[in-house]
Length: 310
Image (cartoon, rainbow, N blue to C red; front, side):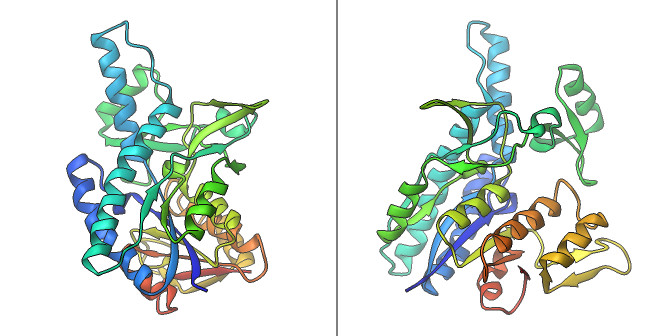
């Protein structure tokens, strides 16, 4: 049987604008197709930070022009981002695989992810969305009621609540499609955040971290490996300092020690490491890999990347 792998695509795999995204997904498709050719059964999740912010801002601006236009909830903006990112990504994957003689269907699933409405994250927004801002733009955003913070030395960004994922509503559909031989795209942007009210699912104003949602997805489908793709080939401690050290592997205890020592930036590497720990700890023998997009195949072959294990 082929090994099952869940891939969490970072923002660098998607670009920040429509034109950047169309170019980026072509490059991304080549890396994913390499894994399919290597006989992995792949399920893909992706972020949506720039895209969901763009959608939310666009509707807010339109509301200024036409006051009768209803407010667009953030949960619906996440759903929209899932659809248009999935559209570009699945078409790029289909084309790349057909060019290689691989006839494998690709399907994007509009995915809802259950969160706890009492999650303390709603009281402390931390998830960056939308484009980077200058200090002047950040001041203007704060004046309009946005919560804006400095993001890992890269500029200013709006932050929203990021509750932890509890369950994936469409998980059986993901499993059925995967077992039918399809390449599945699910939990886009961390999934549409919903809370349960009896049999009703109610959308809430938040963006779930895609790494945590992807880790839960990998756990739910009993994946052999969970792979977080980011901008760097390996995880580092003392990042950006003269004594920076790249890490090839981490056991859970050591990873937790580095977290306690604040080695990983909260808006950058920290959620990736925490999500990797969650998957590695969920069942004996499970391992998670953090590496760059172009090194995904080499990482799974044990040649590079940072492996996190129990």
